[in-house]
Length: 125
Image (cartoon, rainbow, N blue to C red; front, side, top):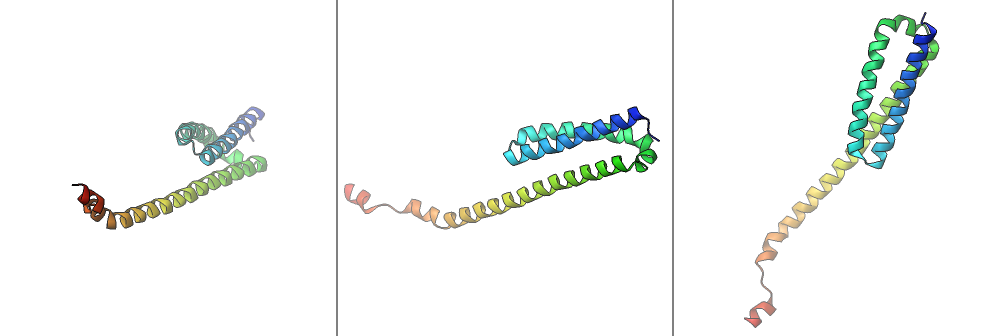
């Protein structure tokens, strides 16, 4: 059985991870990608802390329903963030494809329009 200090410490780490996920989600939705990059680095450090603490206590954690439920909630939130980023990526890829298509269409006529001289230019010469 986990000691009360270990339980509280792990619960605190889980709570920090929960808040970090919510913070990252806000940053992603706001489009602040530089801040997202730093937040991801902080999340990875916190994740390493959690994993290193869990490793020797994994059997005790499995016996504690409260910690297991909290852990499942964290996994679900992490999965939701991943899905959010994937959907944003897909939207961006569609937009990029549309821009590439528009550019191809414009390039179909653009080179020829640069070679045409106006009748006004011909009369002035």
